[in-house]
Image (cartoon, rainbow, N blue to C red):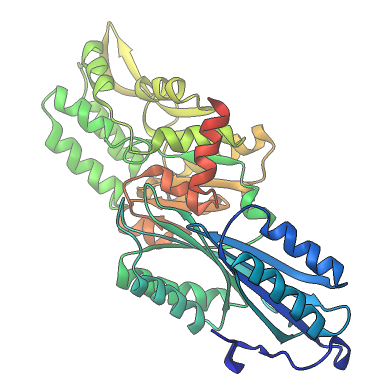
Length: 414
């Protein structure tokens, strides 16, 4: 299709010297094969063109290569050389005038969009809703990149010129209407420099609430679950409810704790998430309102760098119903995030916290990026972003890590 005036380009009908603020756009597309880019650059060199901007993308074996040029002489000579190049290789080519690149004003944001699950691709309507939200915020989409097709479909939109509050508002409406997870982060070096990730454990790193598994061993599961639900929803003080729940476990023996440890289930994608972060040079820790009898084993199994949880008092091989030392509650989790960051020499702005319950709120607020993972409503409302798919490794895409990078990290390590 030929360029139209609405595209911001015009048919080629002048030489490069006719206006100082006009450049030439060359766009080549067609089946990819080795050597296309090198050969085109050689043609451009021979006609004396100077490259002002260049971008190339490959989608399912179909190449699109676009260059904005100073023609370096008669634009018709450039057009003729490029036409011959494309004809010899069976490619489609467009050559047109474009205005000089406008100076972009306003922030640059990375908008990450996660789909619903494996094989459930984002529909054109869902992507239209995201793009419409960006437009409604007065912004422009500069680039769209697919991050992953597994375990969920994920795309990243590079957005320029948005009012941050308006962008969050319109994207939030699109996310709610289409059941999407959409994360907005300022683009730049700070985003990819986040070097410390700290996770909650129960219902985040693992699928279970350990204290409920322990309660099932001594027949008080319903009462413990009621107290747990109240604490996680922010309806009751965490420390007082924890101590009340632990008292109900008094007399439980160590073999019962071992049975619980054997039944703990990692969240799908947890191993991939931690393994990939470690291979990319991140430090990974856990902070838990649960118990060291479980978290110590998880830390060893996953090669975690930091792990802190509550310590159950044991006498004569049985739980006394008391907790030793300070309770790992909401405030303590945020404090531990800071301690881990200082120990690793990482500023808080370069940390990521992941959690699901009200006792994670302070930690999520203190981190550079707080992620609510399948979280309670109060947490989803407060966190920087939400992830509501059952795969922990989907958070990698929010961090800008692609599925290809995950697989390359595995290949290099193997």
